[in-house]
Length: 111
Image 1 (cartoon, rainbow, N blue to C red):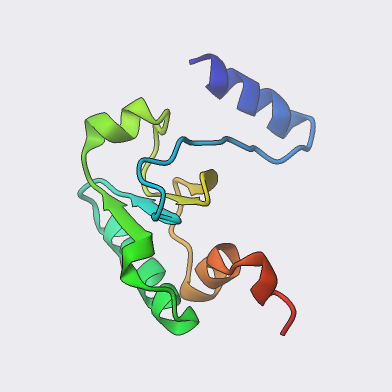
Image 2: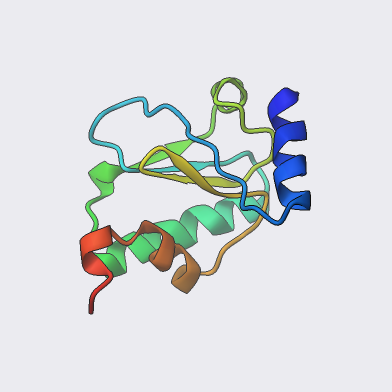
């Protein structure tokens, strides 16, 4: 619960919430943490479509549905999106364009 209070304090100070989540496998760059609701399914679909548009192979994407594993990562609200070990979205459904901006590799930003 301490990290929730810390993140609340950061938000009050106008700073962005940043949380580093340990990666399970070295090849997985993107994790979508979902429960069983329609919002979770929408984020999963939007993430898969964004990855397809950017040419990211499906082997770099992991869909996590085990709630116990999600809780062990410290995530209390789904859906959540983790990119390169950093929690970039939690508790909201992002559209395809927003997901594309988040999962784009740094060297792909100069287009």
